[in-house]
Length: 58
Image (cartoon, rainbow, N blue to C red; front, side):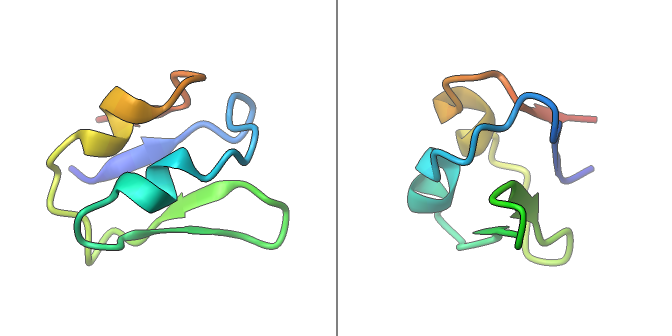
């Protein structure tokens, strides 16, 4: 399963966007991180770098 962002916890810092090795994360119009499920390789880098624990692997 690809990474999932909790919009209640995401503060839009873009750390995950910068760290994703396959550029599968972008920011939506609300300033919340969004994972492209087709591009995510489930490496968990975003989970590790998110300072707000807003990203999980389901």
